[in-house]
Image (cartoon, rainbow, N blue to C red):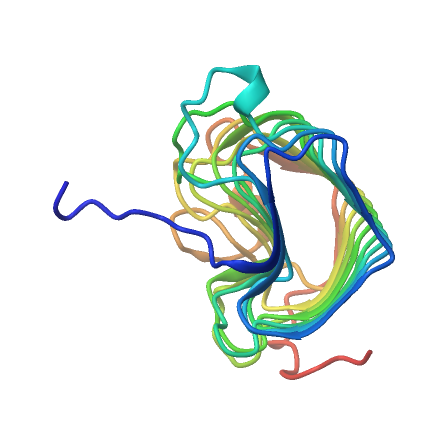
Length: 273
């Protein structure tokens, strides 16, 4: 239909579709145009572990699809992919609207124990559809270290989510250095449009313009607790920048976090490797 956008992922140098029980381990993806690795189109029970991805033109690792939200056949859904213990550097060299790790619609994904640094845009992004209902559920982002994200573009997060993903958790991650200039739309944890039923717990955010964003009214039923930030500055609600207390809106609960003072905008540029 004319005027309706069609979303397509950037091609990858190594791509799998309908992959089942595939293990991708100990490889080096380096100096590549487009993206590094993709698994999609009903890929299930796959593992991506112990790889190095560096200097890619677009995203590092891509899992899932952006147009299968209504897929009801369990055998055709993207499910139970584990991406863990990988190292990613210098992602988005030519096409900076990239993510180190990008997941579209996915069920029961695990994104864990990765070391990501020097990223043009977002570190880890999961979800799609800006509020569209889908089969996405029970995804986990845990124990990752993300440094120097948003080095080219803004409107991004160290960790970024979209749409309902019931039972999903963001826990035990360290995000250090988000944003490259004085623009405030550079967030540590970015619960973007339509995000629902997430728990963000036990994360550390430092050197970010805003440690948390729940920036409009479509986000709902999220719990953000037990996190630590060096600044009490968030983007909540409806594109307002201010104290984290403003994030307790609607059915979102933001409580029990350990926050520093508002302070000046953090210094720009890399914070170290």
